Length: 100
Image (cartoon, rainbow, N blue to C red):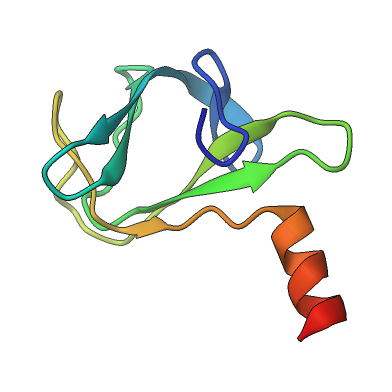
């Protein structure tokens, strides 16, 4: 689990499911979280797209939201993105607001 995201959670573009999280692991060299997802192969994701963990509200499960970029070069099978936004929990945001 990372940022309340689990294997099987949705991957969405503009709220529409286009895939799901298939693996979550820790890169032991740089301690970065690696999330692997499967995306419908008919959908081309621009190379400069941004991936972030979003939350479906207080009761909804989290999901990966893809904010599409403008590149004409699409991501290919087994490509990876470094255009990612770190997960921030709602609890962390509330704690920062209240206690800082």
